[in-house]
Length: 116
Image: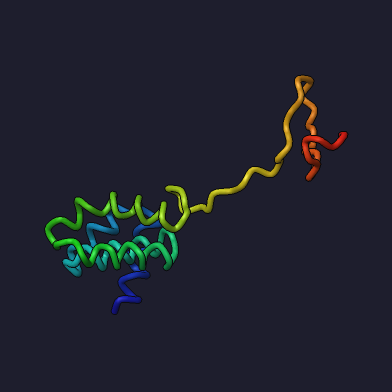
């Protein structure tokens, strides 16, 4: 039953967005935590959905809808993702850029008293 609901909500979400999918899921199931976790899993993968769902269980049912954005933001930051679900990337160039816009690579592990 949950797999069928997840598939239907995924199709609605793809065509109309997450809000109509959440509304329909709430009408069918009435449990905000379960429906929001299904929609989150469709959006961002099982890892984030499970973390948000586990945190929503501790929130009283009448406060879940109000607390969801805050819990999602905290979950993204604790997992190390930005708001789009992508992992932050390290900068590729670690040197410095000279005044004439040429890149200068770092000198390596030379000590300050060694000649360059």
